Image (cartoon, rainbow, N blue to C red; front, side):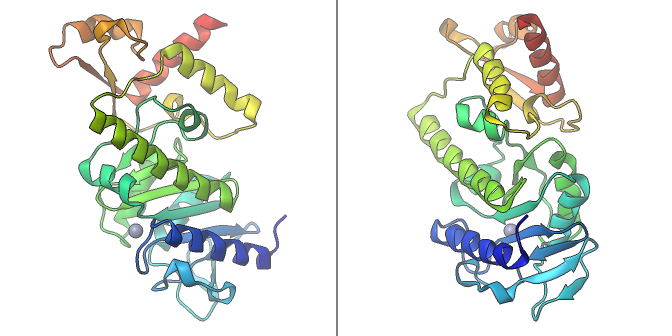
Length: 278
Ligand SMILES: [Zn+2]
């Protein structure tokens, strides 16, 4: 069990890394961790995350009321509280504005294509929560729709949010999202983004257990309320693509060459594929 002093030091270190990597500018971003069962350790508002010290952190209760600290807690405290309410398993929350991932969030393009093994095994698909004014209670409402089935998401016209079973786990998911966004951007600039096959996606999802990854598999979560679309490329040239058999004909009759599936539909198709392999 981490002590309060070590958690304060860890928040300082994660803030320093986020600022050094350009994930935040000026006073952007915020970080929190659970402190026992009924309190949170939270970054203060109006502070550059690259230059924090352990004594700057605030302690709040699970309603966001400040219990301790010279400064006021982050202006995005409501968003953090909503995550902890919805996800008892989550111990830490990280919010930043990494430029490439935020570019996807501004363009309205979710990072939901099955192209990289490490993303599939750690995060699954990365949706975009609808735009909400920062620091208002609209933002937690937008996040609530996705957080039960996703450990990472983009926030439309704003940034990204990640959660984890510990602080560094949440932070590394932020790194993974930005890295994925950079790779995806390059692939799209090169004009092609080959998707992994359905069989490979299934194999990777099964590997989560072998890696000891307990995070839900967002792309096939039964509880997902998320109705946003997964774009699946049609099998032009018969390449190894993620195209469920049940919708192959629809793709071939679609002149745009793509299928749009909700996560729930995709979930059902992946579940079916897993059952057929057992
Ligand atoms: Zn922000």
